Image 1 (cartoon, rainbow, N blue to C red):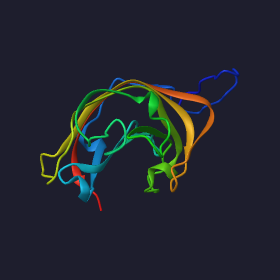
Image 2 (tube, rainbow, N blue to C red):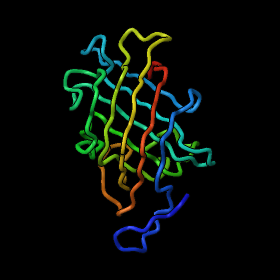
Image 3 (cartoon, one colour):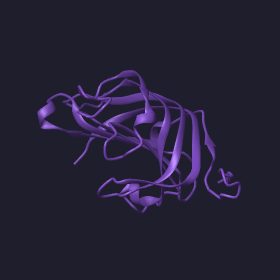
Length: 184
């Protein structure tokens, strides 16, 4: 992990400053859908994550998409261009994109596993989203482009998002394509 200097010039972020372009291998990513009975065929939420490196405590890219919350007011569906600049609070973002630096694989709650970073800019293109009933061909696919993440803490229970410092991580592009399984 490299260090980058922040506005003060001496900030040691202890993270990889930049990633991409990345195409995730099938065995490095996973996606889970949670049904919202009121939405019938559309999942209430889809969570996806993948490791960015092979470290013992890897950096993990993740997202959580929620139906009924902008930009998915009308349900989770493919969209050509989602602006991530408005998705900076984990309590209210419909397309939350996070990066967990130095995530401990022994901790199942990703938000508690390492240093939290949340996307503050960039574009998400969703090319396929799952519908119910899920099948072996249910997938979530898309691309992230020019994403900048800021260092925050996200409370793993309340999802309150708090700025930590000026550390940032950039992701030039990442392409994801994952089978979606049913969450419990």
